[in-house]
Structures are given as C-alpha cells and as structure tokens.
Amino acid sequence: MKKFIVFVALIAFSSALSAQQVRRGKAGTPGTWRVIGTTQARFTADHDGIVVTPPFDNFRRVQIKVTDAPLRLVKMQVTYGDGAPDILPVALDIPQGGTSRAIDLRGVGTRHIRRIDFWYDTRGVARGRANVTVLGMK
Image (cartoon, rainbow, N blue to C red; front, top):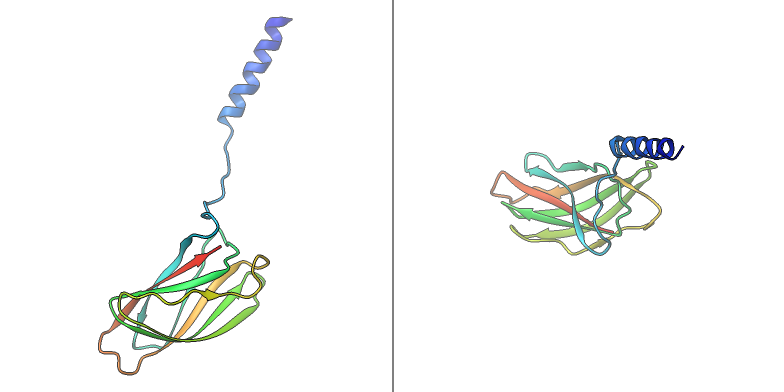
C-alpha cells in the first residue's frame, strides 16, 4: 500500500511539472515609466495614433519622448477599454531629443488604456518626421 501511495504521488507531481502555465506579460512596478508604444509623426499629416498592446495597465500618467525632429503637440485623446474617450488639450512644444511633462490621466485605477491618438502642428517643420515614444506610469 505504501508503494502505491508513493507511485500516485510521483505521477501527480510529474504531471504538475509538465502542465502548461499561462502567464500574463510583466507590467512593471508602480512609479516607473514603461514604454506604451512608438510611432513616426510624418509631417505630411497632422494626426497619429498608438494602439496599446496587452497588458492594458491602469496608467496614472503618460509622457511623450521625441527624437529626430521637434514636435508641437496640440491635443491628445486617450481611449479606454470601455470605448470612452478622454480629450486632453496639451499644447506642448517638445524639442528634438526632448520629453514632455508628465500628463495626468483621469479615472486612475478604474480604466484600461486601449489607444492614444495625438494631433500635432506641422507648420514650420523643416524635417520629414519625428519618432514619438509614449511612456506610461502606473
């Protein structure tokens, strides 16, 4: 009987080791900046957007980092998981290689971000595009 119990325990242990585990992506620790997404702002248009990929975290703030050309950000729209848009009139001039101020979001801790759209001013821009990275803080 003792051998039978050891045998059953061994089978249960080995099947537990071989079971597939589903893991959620690492979201980062609260209080640190995490890359939400990147895009290129082509100055032949005045609007771009970033679709946020899982995990859809409840960010408190977002920040815009710009490389390769300056960017004049006019407004942002954050679309949450339930489809509710939040329009943020920001009016920021971000120099080449610069970062915007931290932009606080409404409804912290209750909504997941699905998409971020932004509108920018293209007047007086000498170069063709700016690389834009959106960072989020939990």
